[in-house]
Image (tube, rainbow, N blue to C red; front, side, top):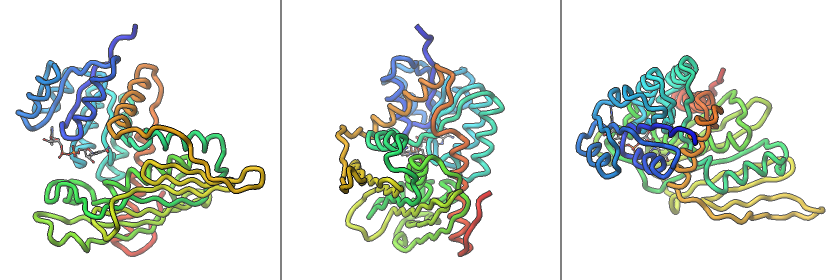
Length: 339
Ligand SMILES: NC(=O)c1ccc[n+]([C@@H]2O[C@H](COP(=O)([O-])OP(=O)(O)OC[C@H]3O[C@@H](n4cnc5c(N)ncnc54)[C@H](O)[C@@H]3O)[C@@H](O)[C@H]2O)c1
Protein backbone atom coordinates (compact mmCIF):
# COMPACT_ATOMS: atom_id res chain seq x y z
CA UNK A 1 0.00 0.00 0.00
CA UNK A 2 1.15 3.54 -0.76
CA UNK A 3 2.33 5.72 2.10
CA UNK A 4 -0.23 8.27 3.22
CA UNK A 5 -0.05 11.77 1.80
CA UNK A 6 0.54 14.10 4.75
CA UNK A 7 -1.55 17.27 4.78
CA UNK A 8 -1.77 20.70 6.39
CA UNK A 9 -4.65 23.19 6.17
CA UNK A 10 -4.08 26.96 6.52
CA UNK A 11 -7.16 29.11 7.27
CA UNK A 12 -10.14 27.55 9.00
CA UNK A 13 -13.15 29.37 7.59
CA UNK A 14 -13.78 27.65 4.27
CA UNK A 15 -10.74 25.54 5.21
CA UNK A 16 -13.07 23.46 7.41
CA UNK A 17 -14.52 21.99 4.18
CA UNK A 18 -11.02 21.11 2.96
CA UNK A 19 -10.26 19.52 6.34
CA UNK A 20 -13.47 17.44 6.13
CA UNK A 21 -12.45 16.30 2.62
CA UNK A 22 -9.00 15.15 3.78
CA UNK A 23 -10.39 13.45 6.89
CA UNK A 24 -12.74 11.45 4.64
CA UNK A 25 -9.95 10.42 2.25
CA UNK A 26 -8.21 7.31 3.58
CA UNK A 27 -5.08 8.07 1.55
CA UNK A 28 -4.33 11.26 3.53
CA UNK A 29 -3.23 12.05 7.07
CA UNK A 30 -3.78 15.59 8.37
CA UNK A 31 -0.71 16.41 10.44
CA UNK A 32 -1.29 20.09 11.19
CA UNK A 33 -3.57 23.14 10.99
CA UNK A 34 -2.87 26.88 11.07
CA UNK A 35 -5.07 29.88 11.74
CA UNK A 36 -4.40 33.28 13.33
CA UNK A 37 -7.27 32.53 15.72
CA UNK A 38 -5.59 30.41 18.41
CA UNK A 39 -8.87 29.22 19.98
CA UNK A 40 -10.28 28.16 16.60
CA UNK A 41 -7.19 26.26 15.48
CA UNK A 42 -6.71 24.51 18.81
CA UNK A 43 -10.39 23.50 19.10
CA UNK A 44 -10.50 22.26 15.51
CA UNK A 45 -7.31 20.22 15.96
CA UNK A 46 -8.60 18.72 19.21
CA UNK A 47 -11.99 17.87 17.72
CA UNK A 48 -10.45 15.97 14.79
CA UNK A 49 -7.40 14.47 16.47
CA UNK A 50 -4.95 16.56 14.40
CA UNK A 51 -1.60 16.51 16.26
CA UNK A 52 -0.34 20.04 15.54
CA UNK A 53 -2.05 23.46 15.72
CA UNK A 54 -0.24 26.71 14.90
CA UNK A 55 -1.04 30.39 14.66
CA UNK A 56 1.92 30.95 12.30
CA UNK A 57 1.55 29.05 9.00
CA UNK A 58 5.33 28.90 8.64
CA UNK A 59 5.49 26.49 11.60
CA UNK A 60 3.06 24.22 9.76
CA UNK A 61 5.13 24.42 6.56
CA UNK A 62 8.24 23.51 8.61
CA UNK A 63 6.63 20.19 9.58
CA UNK A 64 7.16 19.19 5.93
CA UNK A 65 3.65 18.09 4.84
CA UNK A 66 3.34 16.68 1.31
CA UNK A 67 0.29 18.81 0.57
CA UNK A 68 -1.11 22.06 1.97
CA UNK A 69 -4.49 23.72 1.40
CA UNK A 70 -4.31 27.53 1.42
CA UNK A 71 -7.76 28.80 2.46
CA UNK A 72 -6.94 32.37 3.44
CA UNK A 73 -8.31 35.80 2.47
CA UNK A 74 -7.42 36.55 -1.16
CA UNK A 75 -4.51 38.94 -0.46
CA UNK A 76 -2.66 36.16 1.37
CA UNK A 77 -2.95 33.52 -1.38
CA UNK A 78 0.20 34.57 -3.24
CA UNK A 79 2.67 35.13 -0.39
CA UNK A 80 1.57 32.09 1.62
CA UNK A 81 1.36 29.76 -1.40
CA UNK A 82 4.85 30.77 -2.51
CA UNK A 83 6.27 30.24 1.01
CA UNK A 84 4.63 26.82 1.25
CA UNK A 85 5.82 25.76 -2.22
CA UNK A 86 9.32 26.91 -1.30
CA UNK A 87 9.08 24.74 1.83
CA UNK A 88 8.53 21.76 -0.50
CA UNK A 89 4.77 21.05 -0.37
CA UNK A 90 2.22 20.73 -3.18
CA UNK A 91 -0.50 23.40 -2.79
CA UNK A 92 -4.26 23.44 -3.29
CA UNK A 93 -5.03 27.18 -3.22
CA UNK A 94 -8.55 28.56 -2.91
CA UNK A 95 -10.05 30.78 -5.58
CA UNK A 96 -9.47 33.47 -6.72
CA UNK A 97 -5.85 32.41 -7.33
CA UNK A 98 -4.54 35.86 -6.31
CA UNK A 99 -5.31 39.58 -6.35
CA UNK A 100 -4.04 39.91 -9.93
CA UNK A 101 -2.23 38.13 -12.78
CA UNK A 102 1.21 39.38 -11.67
CA UNK A 103 0.88 37.58 -8.32
CA UNK A 104 -0.60 34.54 -10.06
CA UNK A 105 2.43 34.29 -12.39
CA UNK A 106 4.78 34.39 -9.38
CA UNK A 107 2.82 31.50 -7.82
CA UNK A 108 2.89 29.39 -10.98
CA UNK A 109 6.63 30.10 -11.30
CA UNK A 110 7.24 29.07 -7.66
CA UNK A 111 5.51 25.73 -8.33
CA UNK A 112 7.71 25.07 -11.38
CA UNK A 113 10.87 26.22 -9.57
CA UNK A 114 10.19 23.77 -6.75
CA UNK A 115 8.93 20.90 -8.93
CA UNK A 116 5.62 20.89 -7.03
CA UNK A 117 1.98 20.89 -8.16
CA UNK A 118 -0.19 23.94 -7.66
CA UNK A 119 -3.93 23.44 -8.15
CA UNK A 120 -6.52 26.20 -7.90
CA UNK A 121 -9.70 25.19 -6.05
CA UNK A 122 -12.34 25.81 -8.73
CA UNK A 123 -14.79 23.30 -7.35
CA UNK A 124 -17.57 23.96 -9.88
CA UNK A 125 -15.61 21.77 -12.27
CA UNK A 126 -16.45 18.89 -9.90
CA UNK A 127 -20.24 19.24 -9.99
CA UNK A 128 -22.07 16.18 -11.37
CA UNK A 129 -23.70 18.13 -14.22
CA UNK A 130 -20.54 19.99 -15.24
CA UNK A 131 -18.54 16.75 -15.43
CA UNK A 132 -21.24 15.12 -17.58
CA UNK A 133 -21.37 18.14 -19.89
CA UNK A 134 -17.56 18.16 -20.19
CA UNK A 135 -17.68 14.48 -21.20
CA UNK A 136 -20.37 15.15 -23.83
CA UNK A 137 -18.36 18.09 -25.19
CA UNK A 138 -15.25 15.90 -25.42
CA UNK A 139 -17.37 13.46 -27.48
CA UNK A 140 -18.15 16.45 -29.76
CA UNK A 141 -21.88 16.44 -29.03
CA UNK A 142 -21.87 20.27 -29.24
CA UNK A 143 -19.37 20.55 -32.11
CA UNK A 144 -17.39 23.79 -32.07
CA UNK A 145 -18.53 26.08 -29.25
CA UNK A 146 -18.45 29.64 -30.58
CA UNK A 147 -20.59 31.62 -28.15
CA UNK A 148 -21.30 31.33 -24.42
CA UNK A 149 -23.05 33.20 -21.65
CA UNK A 150 -22.60 32.78 -17.94
CA UNK A 151 -23.64 34.49 -14.75
CA UNK A 152 -24.07 34.30 -11.02
CA UNK A 153 -26.42 36.97 -9.76
CA UNK A 154 -27.38 37.50 -6.14
CA UNK A 155 -30.28 39.65 -5.08
CA UNK A 156 -28.77 40.29 -1.68
CA UNK A 157 -25.58 38.49 -0.76
CA UNK A 158 -22.61 40.71 0.04
CA UNK A 159 -20.16 38.39 1.86
CA UNK A 160 -18.62 39.72 5.09
CA UNK A 161 -19.70 43.36 4.59
CA UNK A 162 -16.93 45.67 5.87
CA UNK A 163 -14.38 42.82 6.22
CA UNK A 164 -11.54 41.93 3.81
CA UNK A 165 -14.19 40.71 1.34
CA UNK A 166 -15.29 44.27 0.48
CA UNK A 167 -11.83 45.92 0.39
CA UNK A 168 -10.20 46.15 -3.02
CA UNK A 169 -6.70 45.93 -1.50
CA UNK A 170 -7.47 42.63 0.25
CA UNK A 171 -10.07 40.96 -1.99
CA UNK A 172 -8.98 42.28 -5.40
CA UNK A 173 -12.58 43.17 -6.27
CA UNK A 174 -16.23 42.30 -5.65
CA UNK A 175 -18.51 39.68 -7.25
CA UNK A 176 -16.46 39.51 -10.46
CA UNK A 177 -13.43 38.10 -8.65
CA UNK A 178 -15.46 36.28 -5.99
CA UNK A 179 -18.24 34.61 -8.04
CA UNK A 180 -17.25 35.48 -11.61
CA UNK A 181 -13.96 33.61 -11.22
CA UNK A 182 -15.96 30.38 -10.75
CA UNK A 183 -18.33 30.96 -13.68
CA UNK A 184 -15.75 32.32 -16.14
CA UNK A 185 -13.37 29.46 -15.31
CA UNK A 186 -16.14 26.85 -15.57
CA UNK A 187 -17.36 28.12 -18.93
CA UNK A 188 -13.87 28.51 -20.38
CA UNK A 189 -12.98 24.99 -19.16
CA UNK A 190 -16.10 23.59 -20.89
CA UNK A 191 -15.05 25.47 -24.05
CA UNK A 192 -11.59 23.81 -23.91
CA UNK A 193 -9.68 26.63 -22.18
CA UNK A 194 -9.31 28.94 -25.21
CA UNK A 195 -6.75 31.72 -24.81
CA UNK A 196 -8.33 35.10 -23.98
CA UNK A 197 -7.32 37.94 -26.32
CA UNK A 198 -9.46 40.93 -25.28
CA UNK A 199 -12.17 42.05 -22.87
CA UNK A 200 -14.65 44.84 -22.40
CA UNK A 201 -15.97 45.23 -18.86
CA UNK A 202 -18.28 47.39 -16.77
CA UNK A 203 -18.61 47.57 -13.00
CA UNK A 204 -21.22 49.24 -10.79
CA UNK A 205 -21.68 49.95 -7.12
CA UNK A 206 -25.21 51.28 -6.90
CA UNK A 207 -26.77 49.14 -4.16
CA UNK A 208 -24.05 49.04 -1.52
CA UNK A 209 -24.16 52.58 -0.06
CA UNK A 210 -25.56 51.33 3.23
CA UNK A 211 -22.76 48.81 3.85
CA UNK A 212 -20.90 49.72 7.04
CA UNK A 213 -17.11 49.94 6.89
CA UNK A 214 -14.97 49.97 3.77
CA UNK A 215 -16.72 48.98 0.53
CA UNK A 216 -14.55 50.00 -2.42
CA UNK A 217 -15.37 47.14 -4.80
CA UNK A 218 -18.18 46.64 -7.33
CA UNK A 219 -21.53 45.13 -6.36
CA UNK A 220 -22.27 44.19 -10.00
CA UNK A 221 -19.93 43.50 -12.89
CA UNK A 222 -20.34 42.44 -16.52
CA UNK A 223 -17.95 41.55 -19.32
CA UNK A 224 -17.58 40.59 -22.96
CA UNK A 225 -14.57 38.30 -23.45
CA UNK A 226 -13.08 37.40 -26.83
CA UNK A 227 -10.92 34.27 -27.24
CA UNK A 228 -8.33 33.23 -29.81
CA UNK A 229 -10.18 32.06 -32.94
CA UNK A 230 -13.48 33.89 -32.65
CA UNK A 231 -15.33 32.39 -29.68
CA UNK A 232 -16.84 34.88 -27.24
CA UNK A 233 -18.23 34.80 -23.70
CA UNK A 234 -20.62 37.20 -21.99
CA UNK A 235 -20.47 37.15 -18.17
CA UNK A 236 -22.44 38.90 -15.42
CA UNK A 237 -22.17 38.72 -11.64
CA UNK A 238 -23.65 40.53 -8.66
CA UNK A 239 -23.67 40.49 -4.88
CA UNK A 240 -26.68 42.82 -4.91
CA UNK A 241 -29.13 43.47 -7.76
CA UNK A 242 -32.87 43.61 -8.35
CA UNK A 243 -33.34 40.05 -9.59
CA UNK A 244 -35.95 37.55 -8.32
CA UNK A 245 -33.45 35.45 -6.34
CA UNK A 246 -29.89 34.14 -6.40
CA UNK A 247 -29.05 32.00 -9.42
CA UNK A 248 -26.22 30.89 -11.68
CA UNK A 249 -26.14 29.67 -15.27
CA UNK A 250 -23.94 28.60 -18.17
CA UNK A 251 -25.20 28.61 -21.77
CA UNK A 252 -23.10 27.22 -24.59
CA UNK A 253 -23.80 27.46 -28.30
CA UNK A 254 -22.01 25.08 -30.63
CA UNK A 255 -22.23 24.08 -34.27
CA UNK A 256 -23.88 20.71 -33.50
CA UNK A 257 -25.67 21.46 -30.26
CA UNK A 258 -26.12 23.79 -27.34
CA UNK A 259 -26.26 23.25 -23.60
CA UNK A 260 -27.60 25.05 -20.60
CA UNK A 261 -26.90 24.58 -16.92
CA UNK A 262 -29.25 26.49 -14.64
CA UNK A 263 -28.54 25.83 -10.97
CA UNK A 264 -27.94 22.06 -11.03
CA UNK A 265 -30.11 21.34 -14.10
CA UNK A 266 -28.41 20.38 -17.36
CA UNK A 267 -30.17 20.33 -20.72
CA UNK A 268 -28.53 19.66 -24.08
CA UNK A 269 -30.16 20.92 -27.28
CA UNK A 270 -29.33 19.17 -30.52
CA UNK A 271 -30.81 17.47 -33.60
CA UNK A 272 -31.46 13.73 -33.84
CA UNK A 273 -32.52 12.13 -37.13
CA UNK A 274 -33.61 15.53 -38.39
CA UNK A 275 -35.63 16.34 -35.28
CA UNK A 276 -34.80 18.94 -32.62
CA UNK A 277 -34.35 17.19 -29.26
CA UNK A 278 -33.78 18.38 -25.72
CA UNK A 279 -31.73 15.90 -23.69
CA UNK A 280 -31.76 15.93 -19.90
CA UNK A 281 -29.11 13.53 -18.57
CA UNK A 282 -30.06 11.58 -15.43
CA UNK A 283 -27.73 12.13 -12.45
CA UNK A 284 -27.77 12.92 -8.75
CA UNK A 285 -26.51 16.47 -8.14
CA UNK A 286 -23.58 16.72 -5.73
CA UNK A 287 -23.74 18.81 -2.57
CA UNK A 288 -21.16 21.62 -2.46
CA UNK A 289 -19.14 19.74 0.20
CA UNK A 290 -19.09 16.65 -2.08
CA UNK A 291 -17.62 18.78 -4.88
CA UNK A 292 -14.87 19.98 -2.53
CA UNK A 293 -14.21 16.38 -1.44
CA UNK A 294 -14.05 15.27 -5.11
CA UNK A 295 -11.63 18.10 -5.91
CA UNK A 296 -9.41 17.01 -3.00
CA UNK A 297 -9.57 13.34 -4.06
CA UNK A 298 -8.50 14.39 -7.58
CA UNK A 299 -5.52 16.36 -6.26
CA UNK A 300 -4.44 13.47 -4.01
CA UNK A 301 -4.75 11.08 -7.02
CA UNK A 302 -2.47 13.38 -9.02
CA UNK A 303 0.12 13.75 -6.29
CA UNK A 304 0.25 10.00 -5.67
CA UNK A 305 0.43 9.20 -9.40
CA UNK A 306 2.81 12.06 -10.32
CA UNK A 307 0.23 13.50 -12.75
CA UNK A 308 -0.50 17.19 -13.43
CA UNK A 309 -3.84 18.16 -11.84
CA UNK A 310 -6.64 19.87 -13.69
CA UNK A 311 -7.06 23.57 -12.84
CA UNK A 312 -3.35 24.33 -12.96
CA UNK A 313 -1.57 27.50 -11.91
CA UNK A 314 -1.06 28.35 -15.61
CA UNK A 315 -4.83 28.19 -16.28
CA UNK A 316 -5.31 30.28 -13.13
CA UNK A 317 -2.98 32.96 -14.53
CA UNK A 318 -5.18 33.26 -17.66
CA UNK A 319 -8.31 33.61 -15.55
CA UNK A 320 -6.59 36.37 -13.55
CA UNK A 321 -5.59 38.09 -16.82
CA UNK A 322 -9.26 38.11 -17.83
CA UNK A 323 -10.30 39.56 -14.47
CA UNK A 324 -7.52 42.19 -14.52
CA UNK A 325 -8.62 43.11 -18.04
CA UNK A 326 -12.27 43.49 -17.01
CA UNK A 327 -11.37 45.82 -14.13
CA UNK A 328 -8.96 47.82 -16.32
CA UNK A 329 -11.56 48.10 -19.07
CA UNK A 330 -14.25 49.20 -16.63
CA UNK A 331 -11.97 51.84 -15.07
CA UNK A 332 -10.80 53.20 -18.43
CA UNK A 333 -14.05 52.72 -20.38
CA UNK A 334 -12.22 50.96 -23.23
CA UNK A 335 -11.39 47.54 -24.65
CA UNK A 336 -8.33 45.87 -23.14
CA UNK A 337 -6.09 43.48 -25.09
CA UNK A 338 -4.63 40.48 -23.27
CA UNK A 339 -1.11 39.35 -24.26
N1 LIG B 1 -14.43 27.54 -3.44
C1 LIG B 1 -15.49 28.05 -2.84
O1 LIG B 1 -16.63 27.72 -3.15
C2 LIG B 1 -15.26 29.08 -1.78
C3 LIG B 1 -16.27 29.39 -0.86
C4 LIG B 1 -16.00 30.34 0.12
C5 LIG B 1 -14.75 30.94 0.19
N2 LIG B 1 -13.78 30.63 -0.71
C6 LIG B 1 -12.45 31.25 -0.67
O2 LIG B 1 -11.76 30.80 0.50
C7 LIG B 1 -10.90 31.82 1.00
C8 LIG B 1 -11.20 32.05 2.47
O3 LIG B 1 -12.54 32.51 2.58
P1 LIG B 1 -13.33 32.37 3.97
O4 LIG B 1 -14.76 32.60 3.66
O5 LIG B 1 -12.92 31.14 4.69
O6 LIG B 1 -12.73 33.65 4.76
P2 LIG B 1 -12.80 33.92 6.32
O7 LIG B 1 -12.39 35.32 6.52
O8 LIG B 1 -14.14 33.47 6.83
O9 LIG B 1 -11.74 32.91 6.96
C9 LIG B 1 -10.36 33.08 6.77
C10 LIG B 1 -9.62 32.38 7.91
O10 LIG B 1 -8.24 32.63 7.72
C11 LIG B 1 -7.65 33.00 8.97
N3 LIG B 1 -6.48 33.83 8.71
C12 LIG B 1 -6.44 35.11 8.26
N4 LIG B 1 -5.16 35.53 8.14
C13 LIG B 1 -4.38 34.49 8.48
C14 LIG B 1 -2.98 34.28 8.53
N5 LIG B 1 -2.09 35.23 8.20
N6 LIG B 1 -2.51 33.05 8.94
C15 LIG B 1 -3.38 32.08 9.30
N7 LIG B 1 -4.72 32.22 9.28
C16 LIG B 1 -5.21 33.41 8.87
C17 LIG B 1 -8.75 33.76 9.69
O11 LIG B 1 -8.53 33.76 11.10
C18 LIG B 1 -9.98 32.95 9.29
O12 LIG B 1 -10.25 31.88 10.18
C19 LIG B 1 -11.16 33.05 0.12
O13 LIG B 1 -10.15 33.15 -0.85
C20 LIG B 1 -12.50 32.77 -0.55
O14 LIG B 1 -12.61 33.36 -1.84
C21 LIG B 1 -14.02 29.70 -1.68
